[in-house]
Image (cartoon, rainbow, N blue to C red; front, side):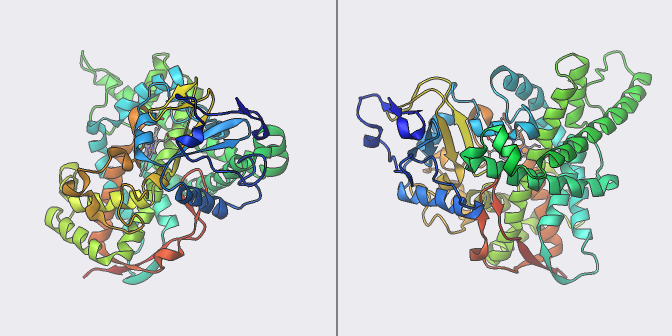
Length: 495
Ligand code: HEM
């Protein structure tokens, strides 16, 4: 019934009563305490490598581990991912998301059950394509700022982290929050620094069971954590306060010019920020100030960090794969005017090869390499495994995306994999960078539109050449996909 040495972890059973080992691999841990201390003493790079090694050893089959009182089902195949992501009782996030609560509290990403459902419904309409269309001008302006910072330079190396982080942070602040970050540039820099510190502390906590409780964590591992939290929360509070003033001014104006059937909380004329929906919901008593803060922190985190990773690897891949870059460039020249006057959502939809290029980038480098769920009751899976209550399910997107069952030469970069004729026989859940099912990414369309816009503007101005080797990328464990080293490319201005 229990795996005693794994601190009383309930064992995974099977429908036919045979041991779980008869269905999936159950690798032994490094000590007699099952897998409890498998990551103990390892740094972030080693942990990342070890998880990949586990996937290789399990030969593409999902596998079970027992860690500190919990069975963990590690999903690295598409069939299991499909079953779990669509299971109505498997929408509860895993216990590691609790370690994000000091940062995001229980916003839509980290909350469960009723609260999650209400918030998800509230936010979904803010991602309507009419609203996304309105954001296009902001994406173009921010993309132009990105390239204009290199005015006067013709051939130069660029460290990607700073300019891309500025681009994604400015974009999310202006689109979702309706606040321009330009006059808060210094605060933006501090937000990013604090964010990285929170990320480090999160990994330290997740990977060492000693820090799962608050006492030892705060005593030994949370240096600078509280100050970093205060900084990011102050930053979002500032943004909310600014937007409240701007929205009130706008509504005041509309009240003065109101027509009889004008709903003040429906956007008219000026771009409507996502935050406005929350402020209006507050007026209707559907959310309070602390709820707004949770959602703003969540949208800032998701909207800033995930596209940042996507764009970093997209530009890097452009530099590594010149032939593919040329195809993207020719396609862009065919569909988008040089003055960008037709750089709209319709034209972006015509850039098919750029779409395959970005998808192949997200296959190899998914911004969120791991998602976790928890069973709220004993749950039988399609393969006959019965996961006990409170089991953890780790969906390793990184390993699913490189599972040789679905991908030939999985470590190679081939955007053509996503041509319709090459994808039709592939399992749909072999590619899930935005997750899938009820808890899929709310910002998927936003992110694709934003990433494509920047790629168009950059490629029109610059040819991108390599400034480092693909083999020199060193991944490390983080909330999202992280590298130990900084990424660099060379820009050469096009004539
Ligand atoms: C390349 C960019 C992006 C990628 C790869 C991505 C990926 C994902 C993934 C995998 C999840 C599921 C996480 C989990 O279950 O733990 C998720 C959730 C979410 N994403 Fe994104 N995301 C991206 C951009 C964005 C943007 C730009 C926004 C908002 C502006 C956003 C908002 C959200 C929200 C609110 C959730 C939580 C949904 C829920 O739990 O119901 N994402 N994203």
